[in-house]
Image 1 (cartoon, helix red, strand yellow):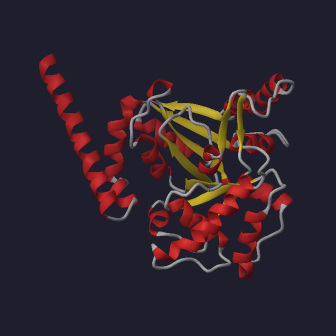
Image 2 (cartoon, rainbow, N blue to C red):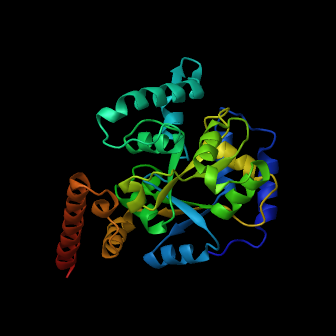
Length: 311
């Protein structure tokens, strides 16, 4: 579906509707973000290919099983505290520092090669890899990899729709250059470590750790990181970036995929070697691949039997 020619004006109208009713801890930010994102629905494999073809420049992608899910880091989810009057959050910086300290203390007992002590980005990536909550959000440069993570398992919310998110990396880099100093390649470790210590700028930035693990390499992965810790919501930061100034074209896009397309999409992805076995090197990934392959076989047999009964 082509982007509306009056996209910028539509965004201004939407923003005016919400400007007077933005509660930092309410649902209005989620609703505003949804309306600022260019959202489309795939009805076929060709729709997915056409969607990719519309994206000009450099983009990153993230697949989520539930279309209704917002963009939220594992740390932001885990520090939420339910209270009788609503909810609050533990201090993110304190929790983050404590987790990093404890992980560095013990990691050498379980991992043969740990990052250098000053390579904070690689330490956070290792923590994320093994399931420790961090402020990193996983993304990939491959829309096919993102699609796999979107459809690998059945969605249960939003009528069974999953989603692929896309963010314009050129736009993110322009924002970074406006607010932060340039990167000196010789001081990359120090720069990234300093970037991870930034807390005041309301920015989302790309993080590529110097030491990538095998899964990151297989998944063409990297991370996005929100510098500002004053809000638990990734999308609030992105909103502030999108409306300052209003963008002339969509810089964040979302493609919804219905559960009815899931088996076909998994088959097509397998044909180009995108599956759990290739994305998660090791026996556990291979075994999950075998399980998914069996699910596809069962689904196709059920279709054949239904077709036979109908004949």
